[in-house]
Length: 512
Image: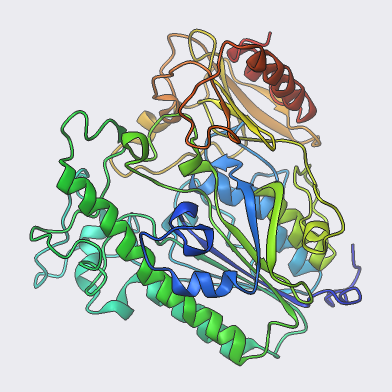
């Protein structure tokens, strides 16, 4: 680790800076650069034309904050906890960058970064800028009385309902404000710092899919009723009559409108990179945390179902100085972004991490960096993915024991549940354990069958799922129960052992 506070000089030909742009809930199959033609994404496609486009990039920990933990701390956490902040035994990469003298800036409208369960991710940035008013952000205590209100189907009253009236035009919406602020930061700071990392955590196109015209009517011009901007989180919304066919089209179109709007503002960031001459000195990473179901398999939102390709197979595009644009078919996942940032800036962190740097792939030095990855939501199926197959293994019998290991003991703010409903507190059965690679004591709580289940475990499992993604990319033929499942089960068990997953995972999955 560098002893001084001066940023380490980059190795020969290495970039001086990094810009990371995370667009939340970005559906890979809807981007023109990945073959989508349903919605317009000209600026994302423009960026793709100068970047390396990764074709087998997958989620790790889900959903929002767990995915950011993957990227900023480099360690999967869905096997150990559901949702939480930076723990006592670990550091976000920004802490080491600060020690190394790298200037870091966070610009975000993502409310979860500033709520219970998202603490400590922003604090080690050199500076941070929070653009207010998106989704659950408690920005205003009362709605603008001159505003009739945003449509609010499928949700109780949300903080967004109080904020929405203060957005008078397109530039007032949180997404445009965030991307505009990022472009201005580049204009003000390019050439002013020895090395920098700009991290833009943009919550769009996450719901609410609320946009001004022309985006609101762009993809469903005949719709005359209030726009549907909140998706139901469920499987079978059409089958059960929760949505009509027309409402389903409208909801999907509303997502498309928001995607095209944020694409427009993403273009302003790319313009700022170009006019400040940063392409030759700066790695630019476009990523997401996960996708979003919009009717695929009649699934909507992010309900408790296995992680199908729509949600888990995500876009990743990286423009790296000196690297010609192209595609990379290697298997990658979110913790690999962290490892890449660490290598570019020449820093290490104290916690055990799980990623592999993407630089050897970008430079075409190797065809692969990993043989497998794990992805999942805490308390649900654990997914093993290799270059061809996906194996989603659910619990054997009751979903128990479920273990949580954390020193911060916080969970997702759902706004309509109390903390007691979201996550039970540790009780007299809790004890001190250790995280792999750490000597710091951690509280461990195991819940058994019959206990009140934590929020994340509220789901009905549909058995194990095995898919041959090469022959069956639509995941229509479940091969569970075949010899292939036995082979993949052995590989999953070996992967869990390699990661030192809690013994409770082996028991609940039927491996012990």
